Amino acid sequence: MQQQVISAHDIFPHIRVVMGMVIGLGLTRLLLGLARIVQHPSQYRLYVVHLGWVASVLLAIVHFWWWEFGLFQIQAWTFGTYAFIVGYAVTLFLLCALLFPDSLRDYESYEDYFYARREWFFGLLAATFLLDVVDTFIKGEAHFQKFAFEYLIRTPILVALCVAGCVTPNRLFHKIFVVGMLAYQMSWILRLFYRLD
Image 1: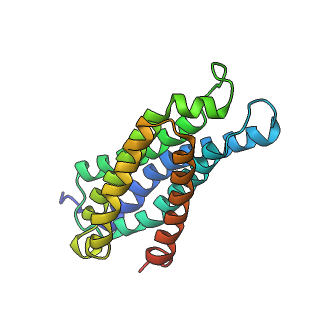
Image 2: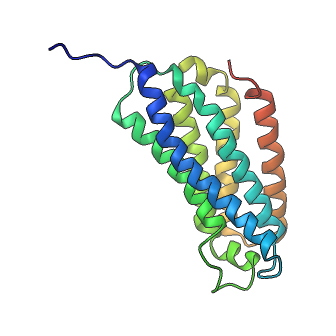
């Protein structure tokens, strides 16, 4: 019996389902955390920087699901490529889990929690920027060339800001960083990903 060859277009929907499960868990975590804030607004003091990063990661997850449609162009899938994509999704899930842990019992507020875990949060956030470059390479050289110049500027700056976020507890720095990040994310999406080609 002749073995049937599976096309890349048959594999991609399968991989998209696995990615969707992991990303769905992260999205659920964020939405449940926000729902808990609405249900019990006085349980823990809110913190605007924490909420800003919740909005930023929520936007990143929605955007991830949108731009990963570009994986449809891959003609030859390997387990390494598949594992990388799933690993990228897991990193985004971990960011969500860090923003809304199972319990805040050991902390006085979201502010207290955020600064206690900032090294983990910004370490993972920096990893997502680096993973994004690899992800773009995977989609092919033509795809990478659309972003190459901006990537050369954007990635080192964002990683450096994340390193600074790990090191400094300066509240003003963190406010400026999250506001700037949200503005940049929206600009990036509207300029380069508003419509999939």
